[in-house]
Length: 154
View 1: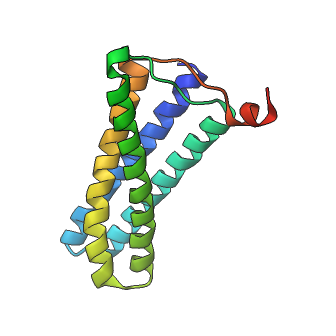
View 2 (view 1 turned 30 degrees about the vertical axis):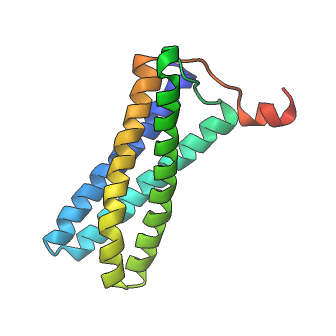
View 3 (view 1 turned 90 degrees about the horizontal axis):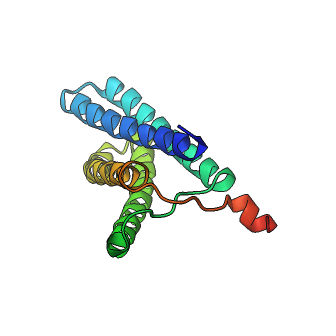
């Protein structure tokens, strides 16, 4: 595994861990285990933050991976990728909102937001894994320049 694949593997692993923890946390709250739910959801948020840190670091210092699949799938892949990015952004905003509502003990709103946020988070994780599989397993592509090189003109 080289520098171009190790970071995506790590970041994708964090997103999967986060989604699994959200599922566990959901199960815990259904069973009435509030404290365990809270700790599990905080761990899920930490895993999501670690994903974000690794992803942004890779984009800045290493670069991303361009589509390496067949030309006839390029448009479909890019539409799928845009769907994933938009969904991930919505999931992040919803996740922060849900966490804040929980910390402020606004449990009725937290419960409503949490149900929607969890489903969006699961779909985001699944589509994120699909992007990973497409870019790093099925159709390995080329690599773009790190952002810092683009900015500095390197």
